[in-house]
Amino acid sequence: MQNDPFEYLSDGPSTPATQCFAVVPDDADLEKVIKALYVGRGGDIAIIPLAQESSVIFRNVPSGGILAVRVRAILATGTTASDLVGLA
Image (cartoon, rainbow, N blue to C red; front, side):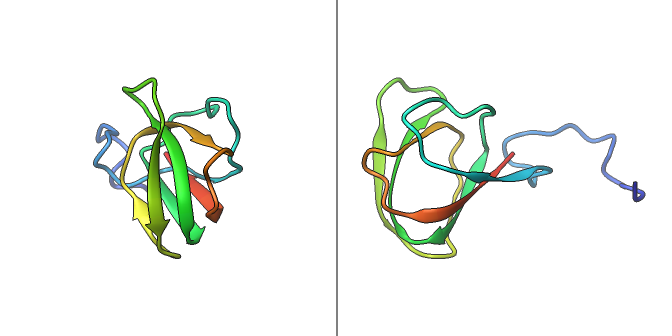
């Protein structure tokens, strides 16, 4: 593993992601809460934020955009964007 000058700093919602993984919209919670979402192909994204029970739809998110929202679920119902990458 490479020398990481930041390894002893705490991780938080505003720090850069240390993990990235493909996200397929599903009407269930993600395995891991993400701190942001990269959008490869734009469209609508239906999410459930970490501190809410109800969903919110971000409309017309552009390709290459990043949603800086802590998310616990990305719903298939209402999501038209694709090539999504979770940042944790």
